[in-house]
Length: 349
Image 1 (cartoon, helix red, strand yellow):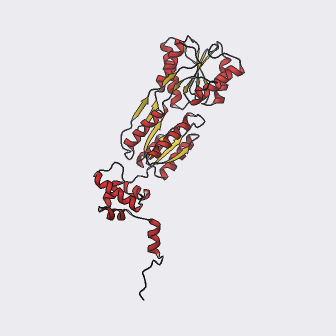
Image 2 (cartoon, helix red, strand yellow):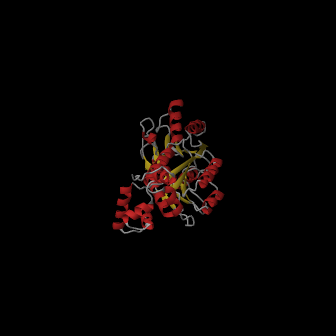
Image 3 (cartoon, one colour):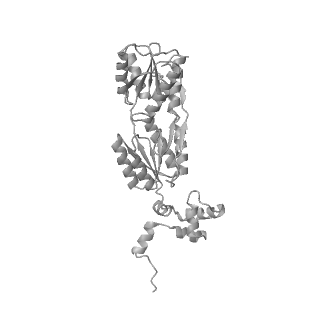
């Protein structure tokens, strides 16, 4: 009696069952070369549409899927983008993180996120990202050094700063036009008849704070209004409360307060109304910056400068598509106009 052939479960058989179909199997079934299979599954590669359809049909029949590790070895890309995030106590930035993650995943890119509470944590995050060989870094945290950017450049990693002005020669940036936003607030307060302005600052080392304050102060001077009294609020709700209390002790008392973000402005509003019984906007006006969802709640109804978050994210990702894999490309800087949103925390012009 003849013995029927059988699979004895040896190493070769086990290897095939675990690994599944290969690109060589797809190439044989489709009648093409392995390089044609590779081009079919490489975004942006040049290939005849009819041939590509035949390869995809063969891949579907075999239940073949691209091995991301193998593809990264060939393309020298990890298809991973690092997010170095800061300021997550501000609702603006968790929404930014969610927007980036959703859109990067739609592009079949993996996302690695590092939350940085201070400058040292930014450096730690950048080093970790480089160890994992990310293709690019999107940085919202302040405090990234020239040395860190140079390390990224040598590693072939593109760096894009989000909502940060940068003087680093090798880094690109996308940000709201914060200077213009500050100027628009000064114009609005002047038009409403307010004449004793104050400014509640964020973090001293943050470009967003410097630019908003500069635009506000310079435009007040152009309109022959006094320079604002300045108190620090550290970009927090509690900081806004404390800054409002200090400003109320000054003589003469301000009649309008511009805050470098909405969270501080909410602290200012609550302090004026509930701790001191003042009327907003009759006794004092309050303006924020960001237009986070809470700014539109009836309890705040805050006049503010809207940052066009979704537009900023899309512009950043367009830059990422253009620059990823080319760390030697010259940096690109994009300014996105904000928009003054008028609500009841200021009088009408």
